[in-house]
Amino acid sequence: MHVDKLTLIYFGCLIVAVILHEISHGVVALWFGDRTAKDAGRLTLNPVPHIDPFGSIVMPALGALTGIPVIAWAKPVPVNPMRMRHPGRDLVFVSLAGPASNFILMVISALAARQLYLNSAPNVVRFQDLPTGILILFSFAFVNMFLGVFNLLPIPPLDGSALIERVLPREWLPHWYRFRPYGMLVLFAMFFMFTGVVASVFDPLYNRLFDFVFG
View (cartoon, rainbow, N blue to C red):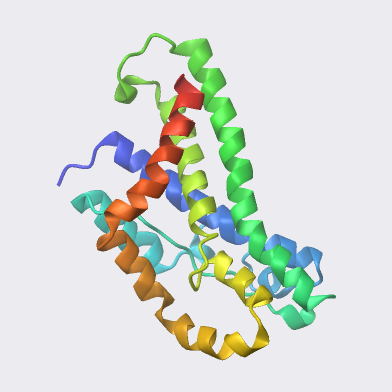
């Protein structure tokens, strides 16, 4: 089955962004005294230790080949709050590190794509005819924007759910813990059953990013 260049670029950018997202969790955990990720060999740009066979290969490839939403995830970086100096506070920053890294990468990539476009291809009419470098930078900006927003959703096992656990009243936690094992089912339902809802959130963000880079 034919896979076009734009899909391959998106696929590659998504895998890189997901891995950097996970590394950022481990780096911030190390800042706060937790060496678990470092000792496990997860603070590396080598993609092999981060790959989840299903989430990093099967799901993205399935999306690229069939046209269903392309989603991906890496193996979560191991974190031990008990090795942190202030576990309750520090774990919040560790959880925020992933989305924060995505937003920083989004800004850098979008600015670079905009500058490269203005300098080399301002008269190109069709998106797919843009130079490959611009397509890569714009795609990297978009997937990082997507991952940053997506991971802030308060659905387990996303980073937003860890933040919810920090602020929920104690008496609500047992109900939350009963819901937590079903988080992945909720996420799959969002992507494969309620794609219109997902599109209504992310399409305007994509359009704003597109207008910034190419407007």
